Image (cartoon, rainbow, N blue to C red; front, side, top):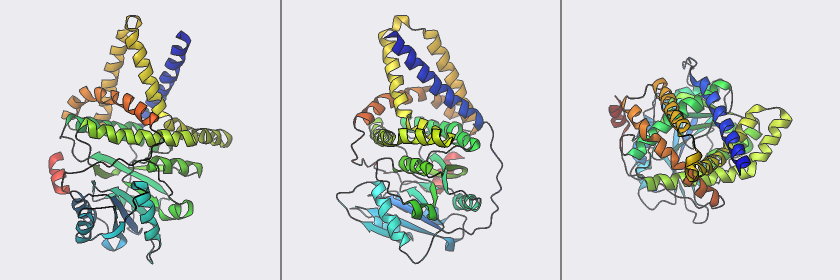
Length: 398
């Protein structure tokens, strides 16, 4: 038993040190000049299922972007909708694509259908931007994506921000978590030349990539599956730190649990199918980006190992060096606080960081549940009921 514990400690320590090492490369940001003349054409695609409360404000925010109106078009895929989503989207100027399918449910299927319809149009688009119905988008988003496409980047992830951070302790914790992830994870990987993580929304994908390799992503985490398949094809995901998408977060633990369990079900499913293939290709081709991508696929398993280690510590509490735990907590608080400082977070976020570790602990049982149900592909829809305009959002953050 002692030998197993040592092995677990070595694995967890190595995994932790690896990500701490990566985070060091987030301490700087490259200055970027976004003066590239507008040229790229975009299809902005939104998959929506019964989103009448939020779809209108999203479409409005898209049409208020600082980008020539003739260079982009908005498509809303009204997926199995039984409310007024389609009518509201059309009223605000979006092109509505209606889809009804009782067997193939979920965002991945809706996007697959939408892409097929768009590529059949006479008009060609240089890139596809994917958003969620509950989002709001920064005015400079397409300008930045135009600049990145002109530089030759093919798959770009925008900055994921929180639309409703002040609502509950759940949304505050998620807000803090995204600040940390955006800085210590996404920006750091971008600076290192590694592939970043697609977030399901705020994604920009060159049309030639989609047309050559297809979408075909129908798992519960279609974004993770696509970025993994892109790695197999030698394509990496880049990061646009200034192109911001604001996402509505769940208000309650129950809602958050369901959403995160769905993510873990999809993550574990994708990991089981692609991990060994990705490692093998990385070793044979001496491509560390693929090795790093494989390590990311294993993240749920390390979370479960952490849970096992924590349970062992509780059972054998008399043998545990609690000063080590306390020092680790203090280090974590101040180090994660550095991410908030670098992101110029509001001072209240440092108070929210105090209970953020309790929120992160809930990932352990959620990950176990996701692993157990990893082959269940039934989509769990998150209801959105907050109608927040971009002007209201900016007023809250000023």
